Length: 82
Image (cartoon, rainbow, N blue to C red; front, side, top):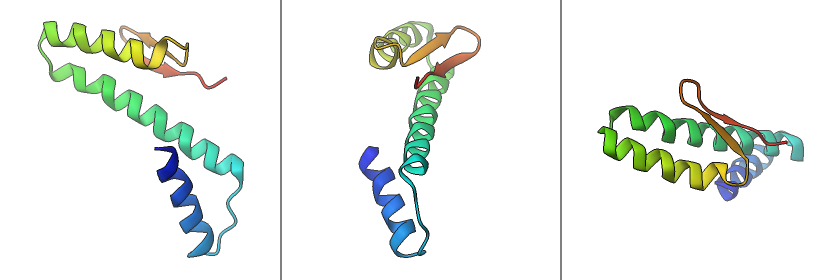
């Protein structure tokens, strides 16, 4: 994902002749990660209860063990990049 965001920034810079700051690239990457976490969470709504419990555990291990994401039972994931 990081490579894709850097590539998109480079394309924007070279083809469209737009100056892209490191901050803009960082914000784009954070947005992509947040979107991925949210989409992963939302796919659980279509799973059986047993699969849902396993998936919640997997997502928690992947995204929350380093305190990057808080998973609220109703609100879903809240990504914290600070």
